Image 1 (cartoon, rainbow, N blue to C red):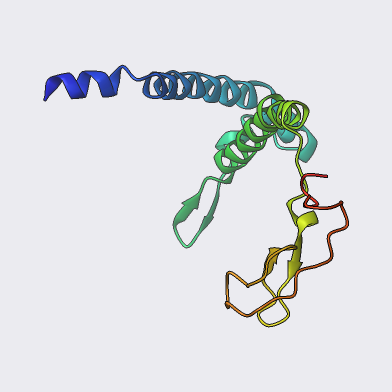
Image 2: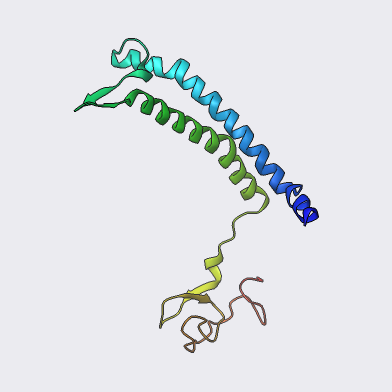
Length: 149
């Protein structure tokens, strides 16, 4: 029983996930510190607030609403989302497009006249509603399908 647990823990994706979480937490602390030290004072200066903007509050009926810390959290979230998108997601998407270009899967499909679901162009029967279909003429040559051409 412990051997299975050990092999689960030592699997590469579990270790990678743990490292990612730790680095993500450290990065979040870094961004939060940057927002609190530099961006929140700029927001306070732009709005005319004096002192620490993150401590700004308003009260309604005895309840205190700390909107300054919410503004900090929103700025932190937007910065983290921007960094993740521009430094992680966008480069990974570009690599995927470069090494595995997106192929148009709709090119060899047509809509079934009965149920309007996409079916292969050379299909004789719809896989969704099982209605009989007339195959399209072969435009690629004798015995070849369009996908092979």
